[in-house]
Length: 422
Ligand SMILES: Cc1cc2nc3c(=O)[nH]c(=O)nc-3n(C[C@H](O)[C@H](O)[C@H](O)COP(=O)(O)OP(=O)(O)OC[C@H]3O[C@@H](n4cnc5c(N)ncnc54)[C@H](O)[C@@H]3O)c2cc1C
Image (cartoon, rainbow, N blue to C red; front, side, top):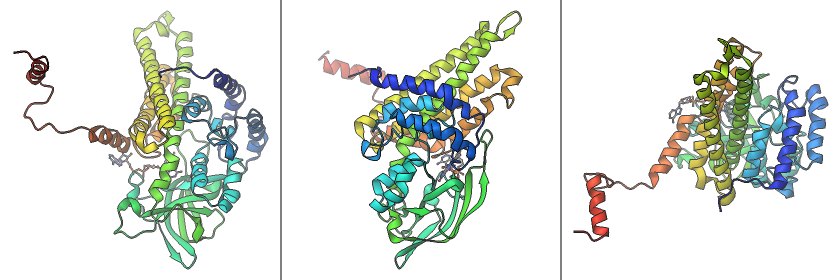
């Protein structure tokens, strides 16, 4: 079956979300600081009532199954929702689907003990607390096999030591999920890491410095030092050496949701540009009358539609397969494209707005910086291109013949043979 239609009942919810984001949520971006700072008075006053409205509408934390209080929407519906939520920095947190909490909640739902679910998962899902995922280290994040932080068992406690880098929302987090090496170097490199849950108040956890980048409101990405941090034996999530497979649980869906939010940002850039080019004149006629401007607008729209189809196809495949590894090639392709599409379209928007476009009055430089961010977070573009190419080539057999199998005379030979021609 092949259809591009949205179920009408769900479309009604999408229409409601669109109106609500437009009328209420988007305005928060102009007045509030970090979207993770749930302790901020402004957050409590402005965000909490909007979250209550979303709950009443039954649209809270839709990534979760009904057992955990969500709608159990599949990836396709979540993708369509994120296309709207991405229009505001606060869209995800108002609807209970903000990173890194979504991914961390999936890990806890899969691997947490009943006590851990009660203590961490329940308040996390209610956004009474926020969390942090600490995997990257200062010596290099693109290659997680380089992880140097360790944990070893002493009696009934794991003792964690090491440094972590760009741990988003660390300073607001009530707990960390951290990936460190626990197994010997002689193990398969992908079986050396393990994942732990660590309460933020545990002794020995230190934020060395918080970093930010252009367009963010506050420094929210921490360089951390962990010194003799002790947690009980049962704080290991999954088995010893399972770190990579546990991490996979959080990455697939997260990448698709980021992609649709990037699409929302890029669409916004194009919408703004459309308004500008029909409003501004040059040499006696509106800007849009210039053919070069028309081509830029057309290219942007075409790129957006192509990208949207790729993400929705991948979300649909995820719903069919229920196994992220089976659609790794698609997910990595989406990861590569999200950064490029946002880069190209925010650059186009910035340029066509002229000098105003580069000012801080306009959002384009922020979107452009976000495009670079998307090309790094969760692994750089190059690494994901490698995944796409390797998957593509995996099924391709070498041809022992001197000429390619598709060279003209070979094709003709095969045709003659097939049709029994002399
Ligand atoms: C906004 C933001 C939020 C983040 N949040 C978190 C978080 O919450 N938790 C967390 O653990 N991490 C987080 N990260 C870290 C992120 O996962 C890393 O930045 C990413 O994995 C890249 O690692 P790196 O920055 O150390 O770059 P490096 O590993 O130093 O790579 C630098 C560059 O080298 C090149 N390169 C690297 N490897 C290859 C390769 N195999 N082939 C070709 N070229 C290559 C690429 O051009 C790459 O951009 C976040 C990052 C950003 C930007």
